[in-house]
Image 1 (cartoon, rainbow, N blue to C red):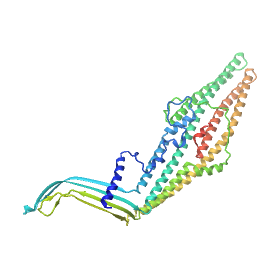
Image 2: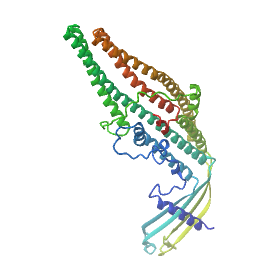
Image 3: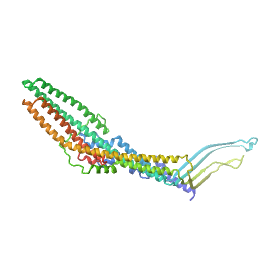
Image 4: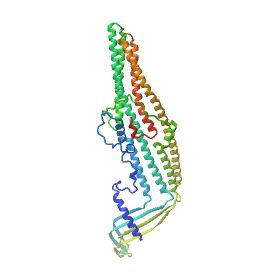
Length: 481
C-alpha cells in the first residue's frame, strides 16, 4: 500500500474524532464514563433515593437529612468531580496506544522579485497564490513499558478517587447524623426546660402558700423564686443553643441556616436491640483491610509504584511508525531569467523512527528519584491511614459500650429522680419537708432529664459512628434509627 493510501485512510479515522471533539462527552471510545457514578451520592444511596427535593419535611427525618447532605454537600460533589477527572486521565493514557494524525494546510500570496544588475533580461518579477497541504502520521509501537506504566498509574489513581469518594460519603453521612442528633437533643432539652420551669413555678407557689400560712420564713420564698428565675435563664440559653444546632443541621443539608426545621421527637423508651459480638481487635483488623480511606491510600501507593516505572521508561528508546504526505501548487522556474510555470507536486513516505535519549541533563535520574520519594510518602500515608482507622474504631467502640450502659443507667436515674421529686413535693406541701429538700430533688430531676436525652441521642449516633469507623456505614443503617 502506498504512503498516500495509508495516510488517506488514517485521515478518515481522525476526521470523525475531530468532528466529535466539539462535545467532550459525545464519544467515549474507552468507556471511561462507566467508572463515574451517576451522581455524587450514588455509591451510598444506590436505588434508595433520587436527590430531588422540595421544602424540608415536617417533621424532618434523619433519612431525609442525610440524603440532602449527601446529594448537595460540597465535599461529596468535589470527590465526584475528582473521579471524573481521573477517569478522563485513564482515557488519555489509553489514547497513547493509538496513532496520531495531524493535518496542515497553508495558503499564501507569494511575491518573488529578482533583480540581476547589468542583466535586466535575467531579472524576474512573479506573483502567485501558493497552496500546500500535508498529513503527518505518528504511532508509537514500543516504548519499554512507559505507556503501560502510565495507564497503570492512571487506573490506580482512579480507584483511589473512587475509594476516597466512599470515605467522603461515609464522613458526610456521619457528620450529618451527628448534627441531626445534636439538634434533636437541643430541641428535647427545650421540652425538658419547659417542664423544669413549670416545676420551679409550682415550688415557688407552694413556698408562698406556706409563707402566707406562717408555716415558713420568707427566705424560703426567695430561694424558690431564685430557682425559678435560674430555670428561666437556662431556658433562654438553651433556646439559643437549639437555634444554633438547627442552623448547623440546615447548613449541612445545603440549606440556609435560617431555614425553619422541625425534627422528630426522641423515643425515650427506646432500648438497644442488638450489640456487636465481634471483639474490638477483630473490628480494627477488619477496618484496616477494608476501610475506604485505607483502600484509597493503597491505590495511591500502587500509582506511585507505576510512576517509578514510567519515569525510568522516559530514558529508554522509543520505536515509532511515522508517515507524511504533502502536496502543493508552487510554480517552477527552469532557469534564471526564464518564466515561472504553474505546477503541482506531492511527496510521501512511511517508515520507522527510533529515538534514543542520549543525554537529558540528568533529568530522568532526578525524575526517578522524585517518583521514589513520592512512593515513600505514600507508604507513610498508608501506615497513617491504617493507624487512624484503628484508633477511630477503638474510640467509637469504647464510646458505644459506655453509652449503651449509660442508656440503661439514665433510665433508672430519671425514674428515681422523678419519684424523689414527687415525694419531696408532697412532703413540702404537707409541711413536713424543707425547701432545700424540694429544690435539691428538683435540680436532680432536671439533670436526670437532660442526661436521659443526651444518653439516647448519643447512643444512636455512636452506633452510626462505629459503622462509619469500620467503613461500613450505609443507607440500611438508618432503618432502625
